[in-house]
Length: 106
Image (cartoon, rainbow, N blue to C red; front, side, top):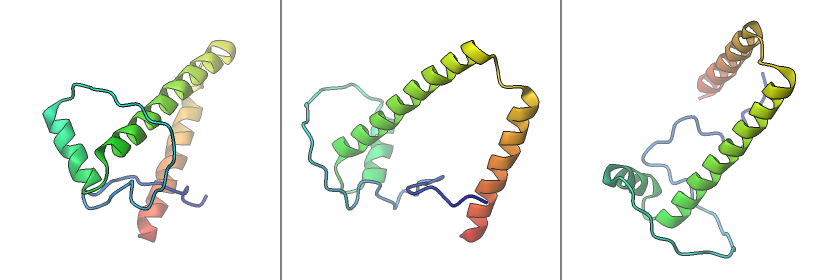
């Protein structure tokens, strides 16, 4: 089985703080956004005493990466056609086996 990717966290516990230990120097831009209060409350629980702005920035960065990846996958599908269902099922079985081995590691 492949090793667990660095930073892989299949489930975030409310006690974990994904921004702990980071020192990031970057330009910043202050913005105002309107958010669902329940989502903000949950994000604050996850960020803990950390920086909610850093947490929101990380989540937005992750989402943008996924949007770009989806666009790339759409281009591949346009050029080569869809992935056959039997290969999708095989990949899902393999991925489920990998995740199960991680849980067994503890």
